Image 1: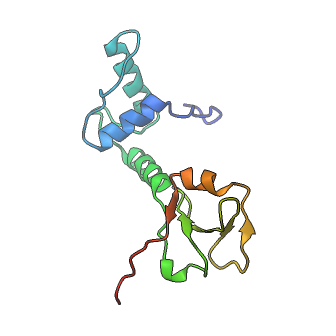
Image 2: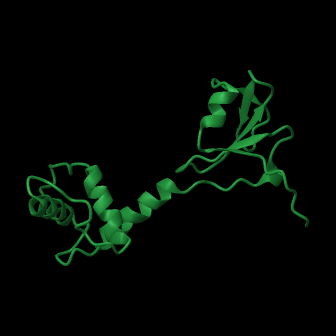
Image 3: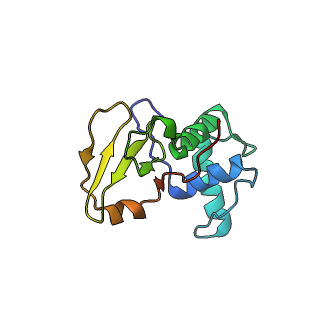
Length: 147
């Protein structure tokens, strides 16, 4: 690939194949195309051309780097409840974020959020029911841990 050409982004199939290779399932998992062989071959060839796998369909250094970045995107920040502001009822731990957002739900119509270190609660643009449907939002643990 020349310096002036931009690499096309990985397709969803290429991403899945990368994850499959990293998990030890092999590069042929889930590939299809005009013919099953053609889809597999085209997908693996594209990954090899990008330098993510070698001729043995194993991850290269660039492939391992791509996997590490993908895993970092999926990681969620830890919530230290001892640092939660007074009144916190929930926390939002979004994948790929480097910090949590504390949430205070005050009745069926009012919700507030606050980042660690901030001094004031801010009104949420989402209603409490919408926030509670978000998979990244977790309720405050009810059990207290003995120190």
